[in-house]
Amino acid sequence: MHPQRKQRLMIVVFILCVASLAAGLLGYALKENINLFYPPAEIVSGKAPVGKAIRAGGMVQEGSVQRATDSLKTRFVVTDYSAVVTVEYEGILPDLFAEGEGVVVSGKLAEDGVFYASEVLAKHDETYMPPEVSDALTKSAAKRAELEEKGSL
Image 1 (tube, rainbow, N blue to C red):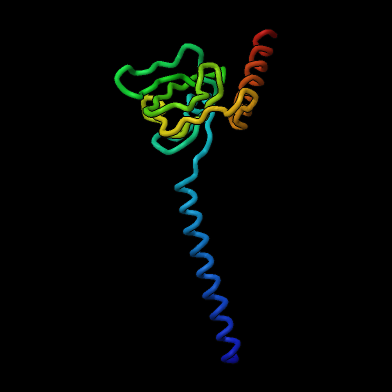
Image 2 (cartoon, rainbow, N blue to C red):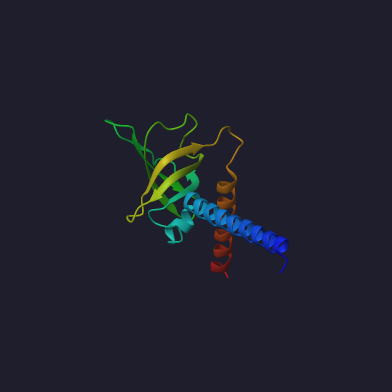
């Protein structure tokens, strides 16, 4: 093989190795920081990982908000109308947080089934619904309708 051709081949091999290493490191970094969304039905069924950072969302169940008198700790229930998940959050809630409204929470699911939120996001106006929450509620309603239809046959 000609020396110049051999040198070009070595350069191409080196570039491919560096690009592969960079892609591998990028994939590893993204895998560690990915934050998947789970509706309450999937969390209750065990599809959500325990102890990993995830997002959950749905509607805040009416009458479920409990605020501590001596701290900023709040406990409430999030539902997609087919399952419920208890969420515990310590901090200042968004101004638009309310019972019966859509919410997305980020945090970790504990072994006991309680979702410990590090962040609570509420919808920003009365017509907006987070896409993940809207999709989860739609799927839940379709599943409920299907079960009711089978039960009435």
